[in-house]
Length: 457
Image 1 (cartoon, rainbow, N blue to C red):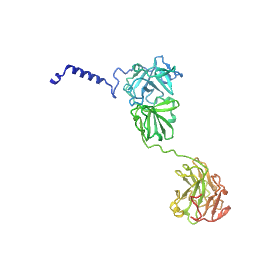
Image 2: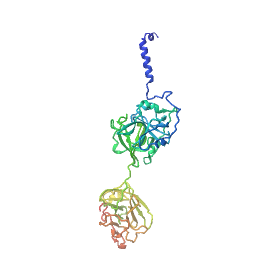
Image 3: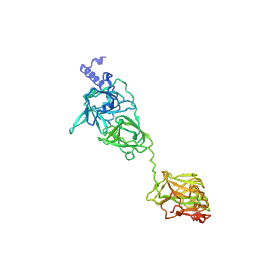
Image 4: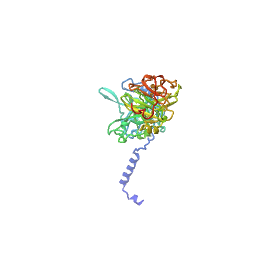
């Protein structure tokens, strides 16, 4: 106490003044002081009713109209500047507004989840590039445009309700389902990721509004709008897949997303699998089917691509119809395989034996009783990803024994002048060897490896 008595009176005055000033400084935990909130106002018009007053030109609202809404934006991270976004309900909103205000650090006064009342009388209503706006006004080349409401006028028009802050639940939606009614409302998109071309980029260029592109796993695109003044502008875009919560914006015909901060993005899942490429071509066809007389383990079937580009076989199938059956006894899925231009694809039911006999491995090994393991009296069908029959060997429903499509103990070899598949079996396109020689086939049993040429067209 003796020490305190020795302090000069001026020092004590200055210390008390400093304490008073510091006590009044707003920080990030600022709560609105008592008296700032207002529960006397009552909304007397809906968002949509206000929007319906806009007829193509900026108007000033003259009636005593009041709307109530919920704050969904924040300028704390610097990605919003001079705007406050409100929607009409905290859950499942039907409409939203962008309010132009010349008030920095507005998040200290209007927090996300605050219920607010907006006195519309004296404010201006307009629409710019798909976004409905409320605020002040300015003139450009003789035309009125919505401008920022001066800071001193903000509290004359935007009032906090005394209700507690409420959690805002974003509307979970898919990109194709977006509509104009959702602009300036909070939405959530799932299974979203940054496009491959932008994975190493930052959110924004310094001091420049920057657009980045997002996509979903179906390939639908949407723009991500970022400020070059945000505190996360130098952060590298996330490389994973996940969900994004954002305020929906619109630039003419393009929908855009604006996040409040990086917490609005959760991209920790694996990226979308590459979309399956489905292609068809009648220049993929069967060129050789083998049933060696001396070694049934050396059977194979050969496909050929006579086209000028490689063809991925995603969605393609080889079907084997055993004997006289009209339903396939086996289906061979060719997904993941590619036939290069002017190249073959050799399929074997026994890769080890194939390599022992022919001196090189087949392109793919498949199971026994597959299309590559025919004993000479079966029918083979090649189908593209769209269910179209591209090529056929034999007549479905007819046992090949003793017919012009029997190759038992021999082979069926496509004539070299044939350059496309044929969905109808045509005997004249083939030279067929077997151990009977009926119906125009050749009674010349074939032995492996000398009578076969797998991998050579």
